[in-house]
Length: 180
Image 1 (cartoon, rainbow, N blue to C red):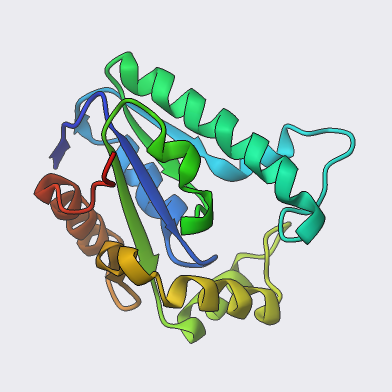
Image 2: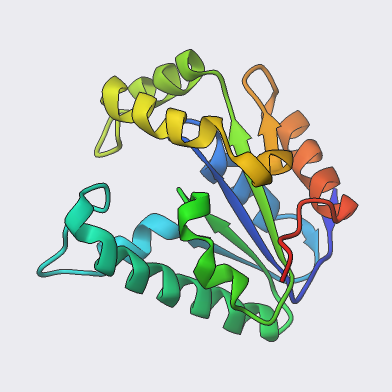
């Protein structure tokens, strides 16, 4: 497979366990335009002192700064000709920073059934989110995207290669681009 779209940003998002990192990693390794894979979680982990858990209400200001920095980094890479794959939980409530950039931005929400997301997260182990309650809360937030519902891609039983092909087709269609 081959992917072009240099000079553009692809936000690949969804609940924990949706397959974001798996697909982003595979996509970034494909032939075609040069690519950058930005893992959104890293941008929160860069805060070494004074970090507030991003899901807490008092983290609103911090989260805005983190997303501005992430969108700025993605836009700079895209301006250099790279396809930038942003992988992380970037809900509609975080899109303002990306809508302000001067490059095309694709927004794809991977949406597995809740049971699949919980199972995948539980199987990961390590320092990843595995609390079913927190996963269910995030799943609910992505369940109704309102005007962005057309950006959702139902997943669950797809193989990695099948889902990768679906994501590439979605980007190639141009119909997952944000207005901007």
